[in-house]
Length: 80
Image (tube, rainbow, N blue to C red; front, side):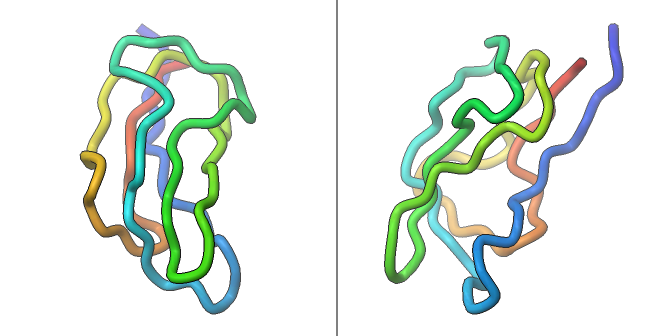
């Protein structure tokens, strides 16, 4: 088993403090490429796709669709 990385919600702009998960574009156990869309989040102004920062297998999704997150909150675990 490779390294496990806890992927966190990146900053989406200096005024964005929280978002709501609209949908996941990957499932647990699925391989993802770096920069491929992981999930879509909704701010008070726009929907934004959050890309995978690294390539690997999504071993665990930590938040369901509909959940509210703050910048820096963990969203999933990717194994390299």
